[in-house]
Image (spheres, rainbow, N blue to C red):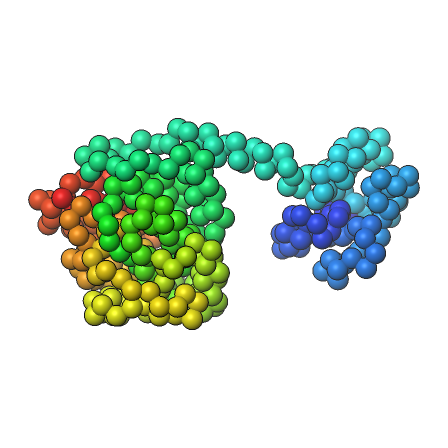
Length: 358
């Protein structure tokens, strides 16, 4: 009896084929891989593997029909556009009961980039930004799109609205160090390095423990789900992700926030094998706090680092709107209330609280 859950991926090792295979197996589907390449290195990754003729060969249609009949195939995922293009015409006659999906193609790439250009051409308004200092000339839309594309290709939890706001903030930031507390895989760190280079603002210092300390954020369920992470591998992933953008302007301190601040306050350079030795000014033009979100930790981050922010500088408290707790919100609200006379502008976008000092 044919298995209604049998999926054929063709070619099995091309494009998004391996990704689709992993997801299908997790869902309990019967998965078959195939290609025309002799000794295809993807073959061992599949429970069942078929050698099929090349899509341009005359025997391709008959071989696909035999595979469908012999293995009870109910769906084909064509990871190569040319294979999909051929099958979309063949299957209605060959096997009309078989579904067909298309892998990522140049059409998707075109759609993705056009949508990005449209979003950049009409960025969202930032209520409250009008009270901030006058901006420098901004990067042109193509460069903004390039900044976003490069940053969003790095795993992370900061999304376009917040990244666009960071670009606007960098246009209005004074000279000084750019400090990020909590970096994970480096999405915002990479963007900050690009902006520091473009506007010649200063050097970027990243501070992160990359350890279990990061999981103690006041929510037991969130912490439990994070216990099995390989945190040191996360640090190495961070290094790779930010390396193309560092250009002598970025380094990191591998330590909890407060320990990192103590080292920063001494004026000592940051030294790592990946990025060498980097000296910092000791005055911060832009501070991005995205470390441990437990109230006590977040409050200590703000108490320690914000006195180093120079006049006209920016403080960004990430996850002010946060599903897992209210630590950053309580800290942000307290800072706004106790420093009202020092605050020139503030607004919330992308879940983050942005504050410019007078």
